[in-house]
Image (cartoon, rainbow, N blue to C red; front, side, top):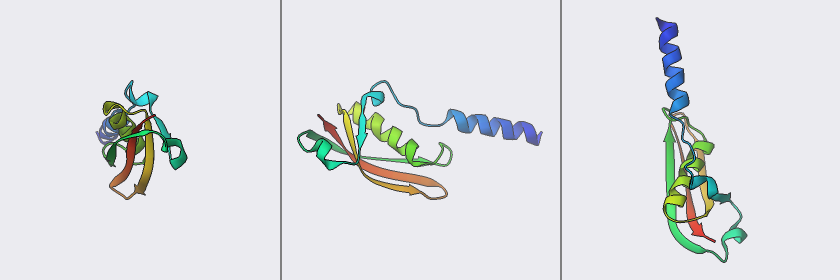
Amino acid sequence: MIKKMLIITFVGFLTSCATLTHGGKNVRVTTNVEVVRNCEFIANVKASSGWEEGTGEDQVEIKMQNITAKLGGNVLFVSSNNGATFWVTRGSGEAYKC
């Protein structure tokens, strides 16, 4: 019974990870301010990822890419990725149209 519960929990964990949308796949991620210097600023972007979604900077970055795409942007400038605590990872950035 315990083995079955562990397998179900693990499968649930795998299926709950953030995935890039079609638009999110087209968003370039950068930490270099020179890349966005001549681009149009759209909005500030924030995201977090909890333990049930899989913590990690990659999960937060994927969410921010998807948000940037929804806003009409094609470049995400990551200004802060606070790293993971035991329960949550947070990040922030800026969406640009270049």
